[in-house]
Amino acid sequence: MKKVTIITLLYILIVFNGCSNKFNENGSPKPPSGYPNEFLLKAAYFVGLLDLLDKKPLVPDDIIEYKDIVYKETKSRPLKLDIYRLKSLKEPAPVLIFIHGGGWKKGDKQDYLRYLIDYAKKGYVTATVAYRFTKEALFPAAVLDVKCAVRWIRSHAQEFMINPDKIAVIGGSAGGHLAMMVGYSADIAEFNKECADTVNNRVQAVVDLYGPADLSTAYAREQNSPKQFLGKSYEEDPALYRKASPNTYITSDDPPTLIFQGTIDALVPYSQSDSLKKWLDKAGVPAEYHKLKGWPHTMDLAKEVNEYCQYYMDAFFKKYLK
Image: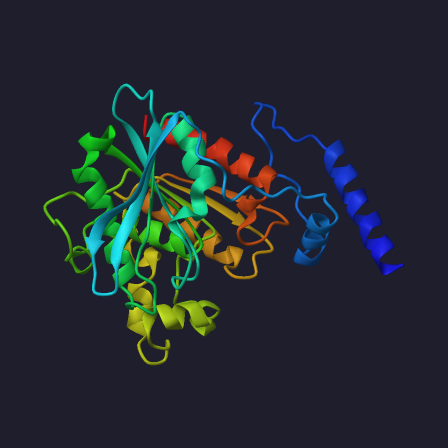
């Protein structure tokens, strides 16, 4: 009886959502209708009412894939990146650098393969980077790594038909945190002490998908991932938590930022993105915020959410990178 009730409720939600207007007056999409809680979302997936992305799509024949390029040697392992672009690309294009999540302790640079292929098809050069995990090196190692990746890509721009003056960083969860750190701490000497410091590490745009912007909040400092990332508790070193927080470095010359966040995110509360938008607005940094009701962490694995995110990412990149 309980299963029948859940399925009936799910169908009512789907039918209701399908009858609602999904577009704004200007033709832009409204946020996909979400779910009251994660239990019903998982139930919708279980009964086939929620479509997820194929996380390992085949690379099309019209795209060149440069795999496992070493951009930095470390004591634990060589750090690698992958690059994708159309074979038919005729002139240098903006590059979109994707940074995977995983709580700073796991994940794979291929996690964003769907985005990498989709945006290569749209005429961008795309890249994805590996970085050291907490078991290999504590903060600021991962920040230093992704900054080195930006420098490497910029210094090798000509080889891959990249416009070195048009770089965006995109990340989800811990990757969103690292993308913000790259975007907002370009002039912080402590984070620029590795790799070719003569190469500019500034980027022209940031996309943050449900990333933590402030690790010093009461909620954040009680979670295991930040403690493992930093190697200390908040009580032991509160200044370290502020140092590792992207909001600490926000200034008026920071790159435009696009934010996506779900309201039933159990890992990164939407208050993080609410506050980020306020801080950016106060500093005068162009910022756009999409708060999706009824969607969880990693919400862009759902096809309809991914399509929504890509629509607004397209417009954002066209505005700030073209």
